[in-house]
Length: 160
Image 1 (cartoon, one colour):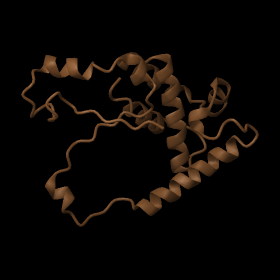
Image 2 (image 1 turned 60 degrees about the horizontal axis):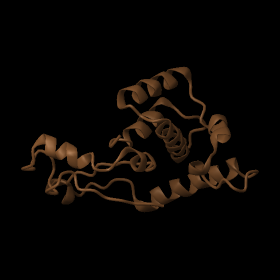
Image 3 (image 1 turned 90 degrees about the vertical axis):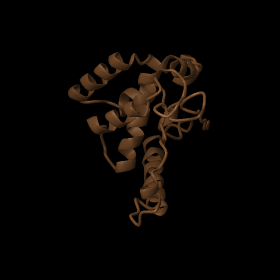
């Protein structure tokens, strides 16, 4: 597993606060070439948390609840690939398994096709989006991959 971080601008500030020109910021973000970036499944922008949110009494989903969902999703994957000892999770699916377990309805496929074209995603990114969408579906307990799952997986490719 690889976890990597990157500042949003050369001076480590958010783009609207940076003193760098838009061109300089774009060049900085382009310093990671396509092929390595293509091999990273999730690209998540983490903005600064406003003070009001930090001090708020409202809480989101607990870590314990998230852990339960992850364990349930991993169990689904274990059962799905029980006859395939080399495949332990969705990320390890080959093209045959991806075709079997990541089938999309035609409207969802059309949406993915448009997103792929708009974002100029590669074949490798297509493969990764489907596997991430399958995992999102597993996390919510869905048998099939729905449009919302694919949309979320596409949004997790924000650096592409």
